[in-house]
Length: 466
Image 1 (cartoon, rainbow, N blue to C red):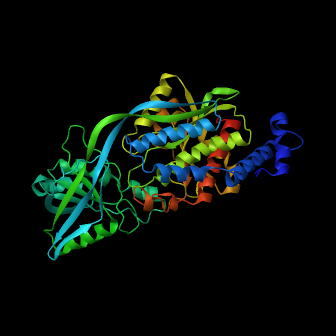
Image 2: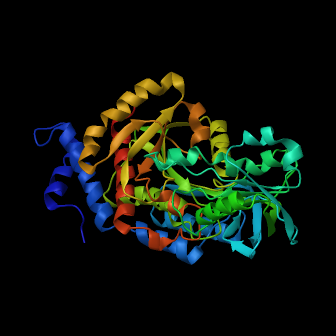
Image 3: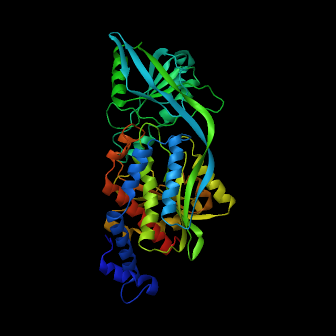
């Protein structure tokens, strides 16, 4: 099946030859090319099939695991099969956390013990396979710990129960307002002698599914176990504590850090014909948590990025600037891949004119947000937003603010950092859970995300950002 309408094919033949011509204006030519990108992405892409393999055949890709290495090898071959100019594996040392046995949490009620739905936080220590018990102290904010002090918290199990704010229209803002209790809660509670931490899962949904995610300890500080419980169980526990202030819990977790391992980013390149020293990057992170296949987080972003290359090659596009597709390793619990990529890029004196990251799932794309170094941001933003007229027919909008964790270390190069913005309402229902599998991904929504990224790459490549 040929995805490009014959009339479009006829006109597209003249665009690279005549530029602005009597046949089509330059703006019309760009609009036609973007239409051809969407036609291909929505009829002939392999985006969903690739994601199915990554999520279901390879599965969860915890950094340092065999599955993560299998994903590296597979995406390397997939990119090589596209016929790109070059593809390589970029070495990086990564942390290797192991969930040897899932955590258990029992709250000891007057009527008997009740098990809560729980999962260990990434990078957490365990209980050495033993049951640990302690009185539960509920808090809402990290600042509350200092007020309670060691006299209250020593040998207690701190229960962080601050919900994500449901009034925030963008759920990412709600996540940002609550996630500190997961990422820093165990380290902060440890300073006051706490025995362990329970954390309400990071979602606005009330359900029985616990959400994992990284926790970060103080480098030289004491470490205590961190365990997430489902939102319904958090609600139950909070009500139980109001009725019985001296409740205890019994926890058991077998997890912890092993030695760092050698892993890889996967990088593919199509060399630019006119401005080869200006790089446009697309990428996502190849690692995921181990509870599921990581279909939305971030298999979707990786497959979006591979599809950018596949689509442009399929329709015969010859880029002016060098295009890079990067599968980053270790975004979830360390950012080793993003840091290593930027380090090597800086050593090579490279310049990334633009870096586009997809790491908010495979839902319907709503547009892009961008950020940059302060001294270059205003002119970049003006040119970036001028592209919106080509993308509004696809319900895409270009806004200030955005980027991504893996591309963040490239900010010092002075290029534009861009993040794909899919519809955010369902992302944190699945984020870091056992449910983040291919059955939660809509094929058309995934393909629309890939088409949006490809179109923006085309516009930046054709018109630059200055």
